[in-house]
Every structure is written in C-alpha cells, then in structure tokens.
Length: 137
Image (cartoon, rainbow, N blue to C red; front, side):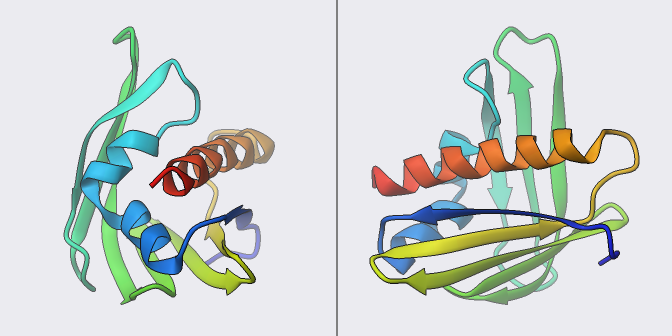
C-alpha cells in the first residue's frame, strides 16, 4: 500500500463469527454495502479464498448512477483479516475482538480522482451500515 492510505474503523457489538459472516456473505453484503439510503447493492458475489474474486454492484435507487466494486482476495484469515486488490489499489480489513465488540478496521489506497475526505466519509458510511446490519443479526 502507498503511504497516503486511508483508514476507517467501527466497533460492532456482535460475536466475531457473526461479524465475519456479515462481512463476507453475499446475502449480507447486499443488505449493507452502500453509503446512503438512496443507494443499494442489488448484487454481490464472493469467492472467499486467496485468489478468489469478489464483486458488488452499487446503484442509486433511482437508476441514475451505479458502479461495480470488484477485486481479488490476496489474503484470507477467517475471523481475523482480509486483504484484497481492486484495480491497482489494495485494501486490508482487520477484525479484532475488543471486549464485548469487534473492532473492524479498513485501510485502503485512495483513488486519484476524488478528495481524500470524500473517500474516507463514503467508506466510513458503508462501514457504519455494516455495523448496524451485523448487530441486527
């Protein structure tokens, strides 16, 4: 990863196995993988193994915009760590038990197109959606 990577983090009040499943199951991903209520994730695929591919379709509910977020897992350590490449960028997702919660930290290479604070706030919003979903399981 480059030195200018961005980190977002949240605490999820749920067992580690629940948190991991919610983060890696396509059925769960479709429920949380968007930054605002006017967006959704109608499709997600996961081949959860090193070298396995993943993809999520994120779209505005009104159909005005959308994009595919896709990549390849480069490291998978169940209930602990995911690393993946997406385009020429990389990300690491860490899962740490922290008392009665799990701390989930995502560190990623920013793109060169959008401001860093916009990228950080978007990824943070998605992570907060994830936390709410996982806690409801």
